[in-house]
Length: 335
Image 1 (cartoon, rainbow, N blue to C red):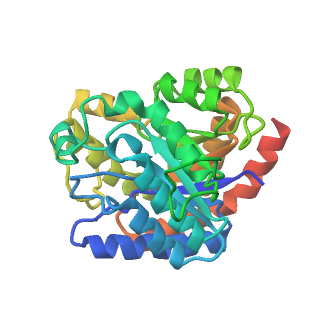
Image 2: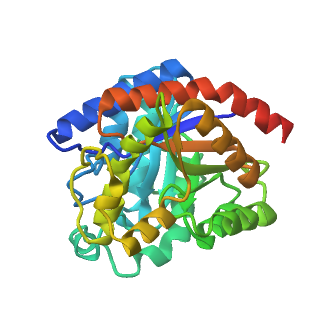
């Protein structure tokens, strides 16, 4: 069956709190586990009033403690914000507590604005050291070497699986050279998707972690009983992306009846470009859209974001998507 996973931004909806968001994340992960989703990832963002997963490893631990079998991880940790040994210790601890269930996706962007990045006390060239930091982190999570002085405790020899995340050719090239699985952030930045996948597959070099390329592709999916209902739920995301273009970041808003009353023509064009990998509608509509997307990208797995204002509607969307999954598996085999 074609693998489906979840990227949860632990969004804070209007009228709710960060505690509500984190409780909802764990509830959604339990729901996803029952439905057979492969993994449940949370992402690092800072100084964003609408996202509750800034302390990403803590949030992952909370979700992992509330589940039993689903893989839980970071999609991702922004490694330039941290020293590799701290991340090795954090994720080594998670792997020690929840063995065989932890993923560590790594990104090169700061996950915030420039002023907040300075507040994180990182050097100006931290992002340029990303490849070296990935190798250092990989070594700290790997077997103890002769005469090795610095260890991550816990962490050493936990061999937490690493992923490289990206939305450009840089990440795809690095993932290929290191022989790591690659996740593309096409749920918000799809422009380089096909080129990045091509580079990754063409240049992939087998490693001890992975013997052939494995590409996971991000997308937004909202499924409801009707196309019209799903499109209305989608207006929450459309409003947020419009707000981002206006340099406003806030809580996830309630859906509205007519999104064209909210954005201008240029805003609509830009938001729709950023949201091009979004599949919205009834089960049958989304099934057809996702089949075409899988066939186009030849993705090995999809990771789905669904920022739906109402938690019950979000859970229902993932239920309906799970009902589509067997058909996607058949489509992938046929392709």
